[in-house]
Length: 452
Ligand SMILES: C[S@@+](CC[C@H](N)C(=O)[O-])C[C@H]1O[C@@H](n2cnc3c(N)ncnc32)[C@H](O)[C@@H]1O
Image: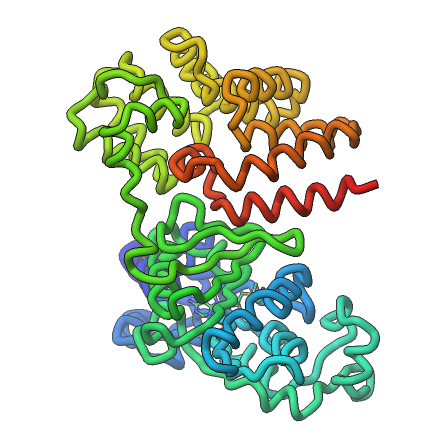
């Protein structure tokens, strides 16, 4: 096969399946080498031949899965999401397992909802062999390793050395073959109350991952939920979701409406109200750039699009106070630590009372496990601004990590009280992608963990 043919099949893999092809050159090489007429094969793939695409996917995908995987997310789904969505939908919800592999995930959802919430459960995967296994419903003990004993008793029957899933559960899930990048009714607007797409997009190219999240945002009803795997995040990749935290895990909720999903108009206030600017810990003063540009950069920072914000900041006068703050925030989230620290220092030279700069320095030190320095800066931030809830929250987290449980309790309680009143603008800039509700949940969970 030729270099052009390899490039062509790589392009099809990325575009139709979403998968990164650059680390799969050897496999793709082998796939082409086995074809008597590689040109014809490529033409069939390019024309969207479903059987060929499925067979190709089977060579490339990772199919690891098991029942009750990441059970804390499943509990959050069963205890928070499903009842909430059932109430919003008049009793019956619709759930999609996207990238369901051999069926363990959607069957687990069916078992958990059984007798509690009425649900239409669908599942899709691009691997035909995996779907055939799902339809058989027979599993090894290894696939059941995280299944609680009572659930095993209730829903599985021994089948030789394996386990056969109860017909009632098997019939509760409708399986579909296809790629989640395909157009089609499965991802029709507003169709789902919850989408599970765990451990799938981690293998995708960045543009395909973003495209899929965009499609999920559309396919979810307003207020619907998205569950990703632990190694996957929407951070900086979508503005349509808010981060949720409960049961010690994270997941996402789509905004209630297009208006709710759009960024709040607070960036206009940053420009207009010097009082608010002060509350943001941004030093008052003339904006560093034309107001429109300043607003746009603030919007990018709040939308966690730090790379783009830094690119634009590089083109405005760097020594003005507003630019110093935004640059420090963006670098603290995604820059090298040295640069982030230098940006905070520059901000503090311009305004020695910038609580936000100390807060960012605390975050940097905390992530580098320098808890002493982290505490020093978090304390300074809290002293400079007694209403700064997030500084208190971090003082609590640091104290907990240091094993100082009384101090942790006291700081977390203060954080909990302050969080209710933390200005939305400051949350958007400094919250690291967390909304108020998620931070409150985190605070409560931490308090529970340090309870006497
Ligand atoms: C690692 S498994 C994850 C299974 C399950 N979601 C879990 O977390 O346990 C990934 C699955 O995603 C499927 N997959 C990968 N790309 C896909 C695509 N473009 N469309 C549909 N399924 C896809 C693979 O076939 C594989 O079965």
